[in-house]
Image (cartoon, rainbow, N blue to C red; front, top):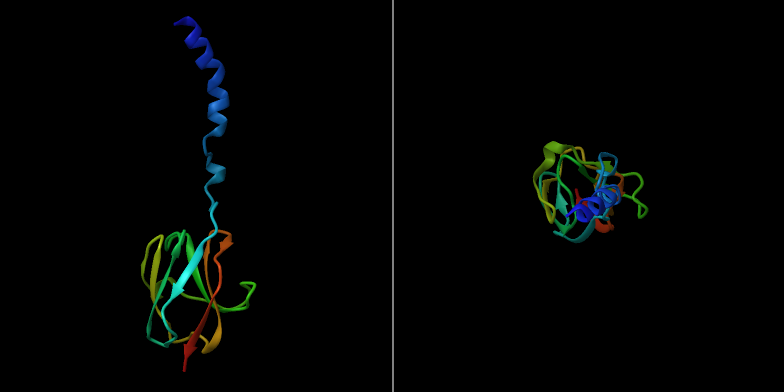
Length: 121
């Protein structure tokens, strides 16, 4: 029993170093967009499907971005109807630029794969 206690005391620091810390609370998996509903007009509803999409507290949606996820328009949180780790439903706000480009989901400091998307006039 004494040996087990000593071994446990020696292994505790090693095992504790493997545990997540407060500094590692960021996103560790790249969000993946799989499917987006058809193009929508201002006021229309759009459904995104994917994996590791986070949630409304940590994520945001960027429409009209370049292929490298730069530029574009970040949707306001009020446009989001529902958001789960695998699906996002939002309404296209009135001030969204029209035309075709790319759509991304950003979770923490990571951006998803891109999907082509157009906002109709």
